[in-house]
Image (cartoon, rainbow, N blue to C red; front, side, top):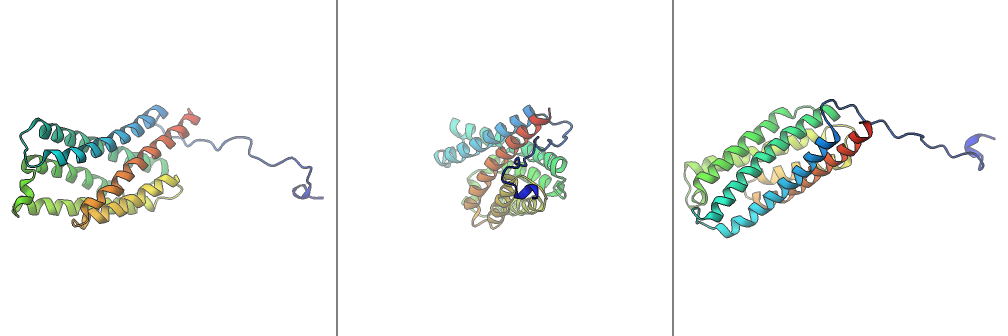
Length: 211
C-alpha cells in the first residue's frame, strides 16, 4: 500500500519555515520603524485635511501656519517613504521601472505644497497662471501615481497587501489625474498609506526570522 493511502502514515508537513530572504542593509527594526512612519504620515495627512476646513481663507492665523507646517512635514515624510519603498521593492521583489514615477511624485508633490503655501485659496478664486500650473502639476502627480501603481502591480511574487497597495495607487492616481475627481482620489491614496505600513510590518516579521 502506498504511503499516501495509508491512514496510519505520519502526516507530511514542512519541518522548518521557508527561509527569510537575504536583505543586506535592512533590519527588522528599520522596517518596523518605516511601518510606524507610514501610519504617522497617514495620520498627518488626515489631520491636515480636517484642519484645512477650519482655516478657510484666513492664511495669517496661527492655525493656518500650523496647518502649512504640518502639510510640509507630511509631504516630506511621504516623499521619504516613497523612496524607501522603492528601494525595498527593488531589492526584495526585483521591481523594475520605479525610478521615474517615484521621483516625479517626489518632486511634483514638493512643488504643489510650495504653491499651496504661497498662494493658498487665491489659487481658486480666479484662474491665472498659478492656477494653470497647479492644475498641470496635479495631472502629472496623478499620472505618475497611476504609472507607479502599474509598475508595482507587474512585480511578481509579492505579499498580497503589496498587490492591494498597487491597485490603490492605480485607482487613486487615475482619480487625481482627472482633477475633477481629485478629492475622491484622496481616499484610495490614504488606504494605500495604510497598506504600505502593512507591507513594512510584514517585511519586518520576515526579516526578524533571518536575523
